[in-house]
Image (cartoon, rainbow, N blue to C red; front, side):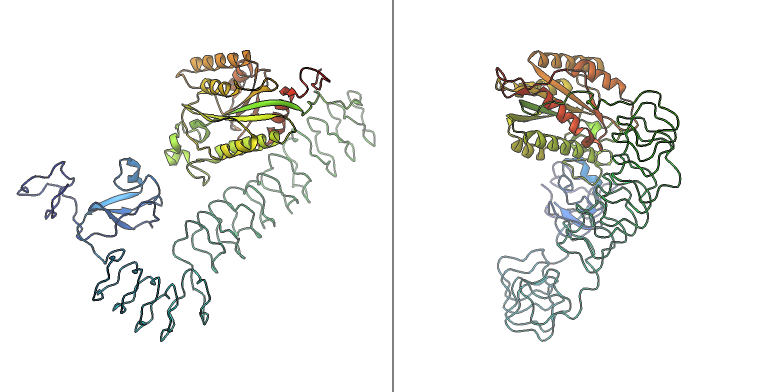
Length: 591
């Protein structure tokens, strides 16, 4: 507890227990006494940068957008509040009328109005109108109209209309519409987008786009792209391409292509080629050919042959022969013969390289999802525990529970795979495990629809990579599996294990848990996520030789997980136990 009245010059920091008698002189470096107190801090409230609040007699100034968010209360035990607030000094008393009125009305109106009007109106209006309208009108109208109208219309109209229309529209229209719309939008955007855009765009983009796009594009793109693309592109392209293309192409190509290609080709090619080829070629070819041919041919042949043949033959022959013969013959002969003969004869056998599997097997699938720090730290080596520190871990406009786009891609990939497998006309259940330093069983075996709900509740944890614990926990969820189902484990990770502390001991622990699971007839499928510029051959070899049941490892980057979804789906269905196990026709595939 403190003294009843502040000292003339308060100390820099309060004493643990106040002295009975004040000291004869203040400390050498006293904290500044600011006089009367500003408004009191209210948790989970939005504060503009520069707003001053007081809490327990200490005055703080907001210096960051996160001032009112959870975990940033000024003076809290968590030290991160200092990133959002600056201590200005101490205070006593109030500067202005109270934020909210007293429960009992005063008999005489106050000289100045309270910030928030009282629930029941006073018998007579205050000498000055309130800044905010009252919930119900006063019994007698004010001599001068209020700057903004009351929330409910008065029984008798005022002598003059209000100076400005209300911010939210009234439930019923006024007797007469206002002459002019508001001249400018609000100074600060809402935390949530409005249902429809303002007449003029705000000076700074909102944190999230409005529910309905504006008729004209904003001068600069929003921080996060809208869910559906806007009807027209923004005046200047965003720093990163949108997840889906706009309905109309921009006047200038973006610096990088959008993640999925547009339904129609752009009028001119992008500056950089897309990672995956478009479904149809652009209307006009690029000014010069690509440096190297694509790894896989396009679904439709180009009008003209490429300068050099593709690495692998296309399913259908081109309209015209290539300038140079391919290293391997096409599956079908071309309509016209090539100038020189091919090195090898044409293949007429159209059999697939490996037999397909019947999608009629029963199985249980446990998915183990890696939530270690490397998923979101952007190679900063931070563990990103609970997505902290934000500067290293939080990116892409994602909330802290998702933390970064990489984890969002992993979760959506898992949901898509579970949905596709769950819609098979077979018996199957799913369990979910996630791991960082610690391992958590998010759900035991449950239906695919319930598993989707479980995946939607996952929150990113950060930490190290406890692969051994993930395999062990997954196996525990599969131990109660019915005998007519095959137990399958899908491990999604982005690197080598790190628990226990050394790499060798962590790999040995994971290898032993994988061997124990396979001894219980569980089939393990690893998925390794690597960045495009990483050399992960060591991790691939470890997963292939020590973890994978058949030696297969599915490798992708975070953005391209959907490209391996079909391959992982086939691997699961190929291992599932046929429905008529124990007798009848064998529907499994052999060599």
